[in-house]
View 1 (tube, helix red, strand yellow):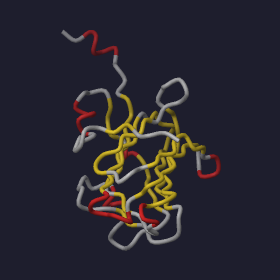
View 2 (tube, one colour):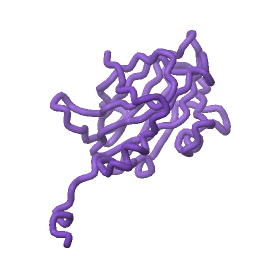
View 3 (tube, helix red, strand yellow):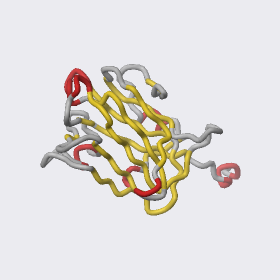
View 4 (spheres, helix red, strand yellow):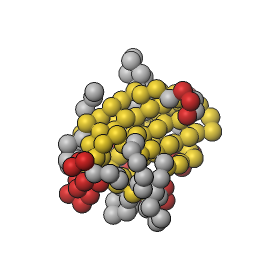
Length: 172
């Protein structure tokens, strides 16, 4: 069981992008959910608005599936959760799995969240601290606070490292 890297309260993962070392690649993926209430689906999960959210509508585990068309290098997953707003809908236990497809997913992280408030940065690295390469990421909500049934997630971002180009070295 690992504890996610917490950023200072209110720290936005877009600050990571401004460093020039990573870029958000969620738009390159196909997103699907195990269930959702009408009007509370993938669009709300990806709309850059912390006031909107995905709300599951079914039995646990609640799943977010992120599938890439080609094998993709992924460095960090950022999830926004807000216990003060969502209470029993807030995830308390999350599993992050990666693989080529639904049939060979392997858990690489399991997180215990205690009343989270803000962005949770989850490194997606192998045993050598290198970013993983995968076709698919699955986020499974295994439990909620206060034994809640359905879950809320407000935003999810997926980051890849920015590769240095040899062209940069020859700029005048």
